[in-house]
Image: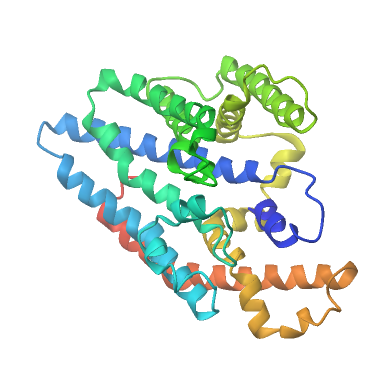
Length: 342
C-alpha cells in the first residue's frame, strides 16, 4: 500500500524505477483468494443443512460486502466531491454504480483524485458475479470454470488490438483482471480441497513464473524476443503472487518476519483499504488546507519530500477517521449478522 501511494504521489516528478502496480495486483489476488475461500466454506455449511439457502445467502453476502466495502467507498466519494475532484460531479453515475473503470478504459485518461477508483470498480463487479459461479455451478464444474476464467484474461490481451478503435485501455476492463481474481480463486479451491499452503510445487511454480514475468516485462522494453507470450505476462505474475500469498499465510521468518511484525506496518495493513481510498484524494485535500505547497518552493529536493509527507499525513488522518467512524462500527454490525462468514 505504501508503494502504491508513493508511486501515485511521485509519478510526475521522479522516474519510475519499479513496476509498483504489482502491489495493486496482489490486492486482486487476495480478493479472489479470500472471497472464494469464504464462499466455498459457506456452501459446505449450507448444503450440509439440506435446506434451500442460495437466495438468502446471496442477500446476506451482499449486505455484508456493503457494510465492509461500500459504506467507506461512498464516504470517500463524497469527500472527493467536497474537495472538488474534477471528475466526480460530471461522471457521478459512473462512480456510484462502480463502472468508472469502463469510463476510464473508453476515454484513456486518468481523472485527478479519483483515478484509483478503477480498481475498486473492478472489485465490486467481481463481488457481484462471483457468488453465482461458486454457489450455483455444480461442484464438479468449479475447477474447469475457474481455469476458464483465468484463461479469459490472456485471451483478451491477445485480441486487444481489435478493441483499440472502441476502448483506449482494454486492460482496465474486468475481463483483463480475471487471471488475478481467478488465480487467487484457484489457490482457495486447492486449499479447500486439502492442498497445503507449504506446497513445494507451488513455490517452485511461483519462482519460475516470476522469472518468466520479469523476462517478458524487461524483454518487451528492450525489444528482446518474447515468443508470443506477452499475453501471458500478467498470468505468470498472478501465479507468482499466489505463491507469495501462500507463503505469507504460513508465515515468514528472520528479518522479514521482524519487519512485517512492526506495529506501524501491522496498523497500515489493517487500515489498508482506507489508505487506498484516500491516498489519491489527499493531494487535493492538502491543496485546500495548505495551498502554499504549490507556490513553486516545494517542487524538488527537501521541499518535495515535505509535500509528500503532508500527503501521507492527510491520508493517514482521513484513514483513521474512516476507520473509527465508519469501518469499525459497521464491522461490528457485520460480525453480528453471521460471525462464521468471512
